[in-house]
Image (cartoon, rainbow, N blue to C red):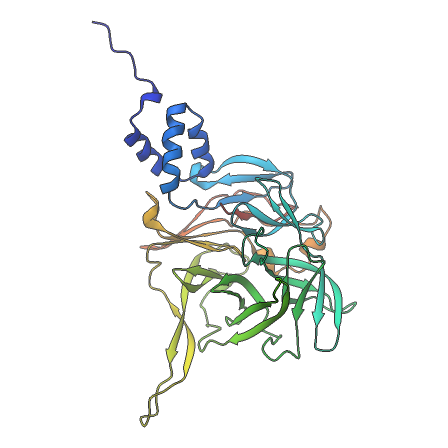
Length: 398
């Protein structure tokens, strides 16, 4: 008797195809699956509405080209793009770019080709007059999608107040299409500058921009719009934390803010020393506590603390300045709690983007995932990756 003819892949039962789909988290790999045959395309299209949120891909930038690498599918290179400096990401495949390293700031959607102007000039409002300076944007995010008329951008910028003076970092705001961004400096009482007050990260949460400082305090900034959507002013509130500026045993490589489950988390990244790669993380939640009473009356004052989490509690955290995201592990088959991180140490180097093409060295090898114990460990995705003269790596947000 002749052996039965093998069944075609097109005849694969829909339930089995769904089980396969649940184990293919990469959006680009799913797209490749959908073009295999018509029957697969029909099932994948029907499942797309119920699929969990897509996870960011890694935008890794070697010296001669820009690649989209996906650790979800064996770290394969999916596409290539030209390589300007990237300083932020936003949902829907939007990137903040600096085509001239220190100028030519732009917001670009790499899938649709849409583009928005981003200022190159900073207006400093000091209560007397506006003074304008060339600026370099180090990190940025948006309050709303770029197509929304009420969209406001906020960023961490560096500028030189006077010739020969050291560069100063501050927070700034603009609307897409503006020719200049604006910031508030002293003598604004709620926006102090100085040691420990330089902004380290920014996130939009609960209707306000939150800037995390190097001293682990938060500047909460709420833009005020007029009737036609223009920014009239930005209200600034300094939130001081009682236990800010922890005395950590290891070197602090970076701090990030992440909005997760309706609250703000601070993620602190460690290394054994400044020259060593990332070794561990600690995660804290923003917690308001009541001040103790004096025994005669109930306390009616509150203060803020950073409360360390014992566990990530089913979270996957993707950290990057201005673009950190949180995802729930139980929506993704085979995944575990952890922190995915980029090589973004150049954020502290005020000179790197001003160097010539042969002298710029954006490190691209300290990229990976930190997992909780026992024992906690770091898995590096590209330990052999050489430095880039274009840009540090970035997240491609779906």
